[in-house]
Amino acid sequence: AKDEAVAFVERERARLLTETERCLMCVLGRADRDENLVVAENDHATLRLNRLPSRRSELMVILRRHAEQNADVRPDEYLALYSLAHRAACTLERHRGALRVFVAQLGAPDEVLTSYPHVHVHVLPLYEGG
Picture 1 (cartoon, rainbow, N blue to C red):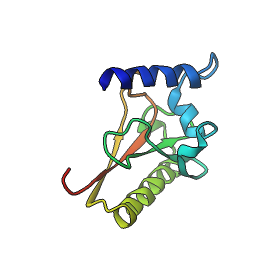
Picture 2: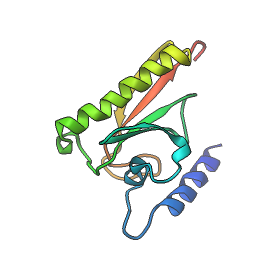
Picture 3: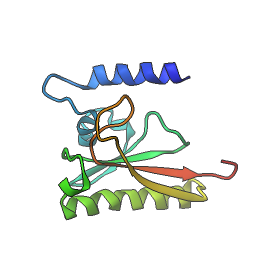
Picture 4: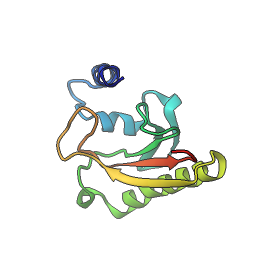
């Protein structure tokens, strides 16, 4: 399964990235591709289904503008990012049966296969039994 996931990520990177756009999260944050995965958006962020979730119903909120650290994010952008994360967490609890929801800001300082130096938030539901 890991080899399949790695191959999938490599295919998606090849499909979505161009010579002028090298940040996969920037592409995904703009919501101009794979619109069927976009759940909600606002002026500064996009809430979308994670295509390689670690948990059922896992979502990601991606800042539309490229920023690699919190210090690079303006307060209005930060509020917009976490407003969508809050909305997602409440929906997962109320309508998808999540017992708890973790909201985690992740991302590697350097690009690796499944993590990117671009501010984004994972919304991870926990269900009974795991």
